[in-house]
Image (cartoon, rainbow, N blue to C red; front, side, top):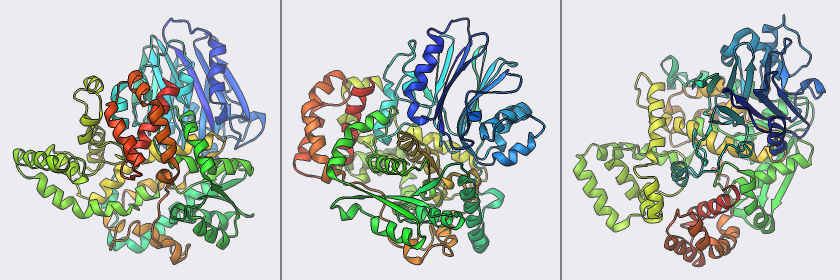
Length: 635
């Protein structure tokens, strides 16, 4: 796990400050790799690469990056892990090796296969390879989007980095707010590639590759796509075989992610997914696995420590707990914006920050998590409601358009803020019922909440365009047009929520403490298997995550597998209300003057809602509070 930077002047323009600039870019992301730092530039002085190293494989200096091929005409900077590097090393055995790193395997594999190497990789990664012979830069990001990669192309210069903060150093890059990106952020509370909050700076999409040549970006395309219902779909008749296949594929994915030259620990909530990871790790480890859990002082409704302790005891882990108190919470709130140069308005980031800190304090550089299982195998209870009501929604959507619009308009006069009204509006506009990850301000509320100035800047913009992209990708992945609503929910979860919320959250919060987060459920072989399974095996007889739980019955006890899902929540209202109220009262007028985004009267309503101790608007208030802090810090 590392951080990477690079600058490529593909025109005749001279890069100002050159060597000093790439070093400063490295320093901005030092937290991603404090063990070593390196820079390199090609003889012509047009390509500059930078790297910060977190030593996980081959802790010696032989793993130093940027790493050069034998002929010194090919150079790589690499962030992540290629878990099957030992098998791939055999395919390149005629080439020389000076280290036992996966980075050198990647470099040599490029010599043999060029950009075709991507099909061989099993792991999480973002990398850039400079090819002097072809005079081009080759970049790629892993299939699930576990490792971040940002880029900007302007005035004949292409630059990239693991984090936005490095690109913001570049003297030719301006901090200009992207209004359309902000508009979508208010709906989803996270950024969806290729958007960033900065106009002109783009985020690499998961599973994509890019080639930058003498004319700039000449290729940017996906190298991996999901195929739904592969081989005709795994059906109910295959249930017993499927249970075994899911289990063995997860086992293999986990075994790969335990490969490390430093100790590997795990985040443990006591839920199904993290418990399965810990159980499998304990079976394969020669020593007690270090596990880490979080709780909240005096907040039993948000606390799963007792369940985590039960799992830790069962598998004899070396267990560590952190009890977050109100003071911790208060001190952490404003610091969130420093971690997230790409904004993410998710309050659960706070406990994950402390979990990562706890791991680092106990000499763990690598942690495994259960992220992604709920999206792949339909683990959310509220998804059942969408599955149950989609038939009704579709029948209503089939009504004549004038009638639908009249009904939606009439109901809006009664209750324009209700979820039902939002559903009626979506049907009237021929939109999808389910908007994955839309946890912020509803589309039908934006006009009343946003300022006339901001609405003018985003005229014609609608955040359904994000879902529409996923619908097109889903249709492409489902050429047989098999109607499977559960897998539609899973697909949008995998494409949107997993990379842009959960994996982004894990990467930034773990790397803030120089800890590498690995997610076995994100192994692309397991992802492909999950999307070959019919939805009625994911939600069955009212049981979410049915086939995954059945596959784990030989590993986990019934009380862990089938206890009511609690979810990972934080006492935001209980501990955060007063903090957010004070901040909004002190800052909203100046904020609205500096950034004419919201109507000041609407923020005043939210303040009164806090003063009345109402919970209904707490997530919206958190979004506004976070955004105000974020814009003040980064703009």
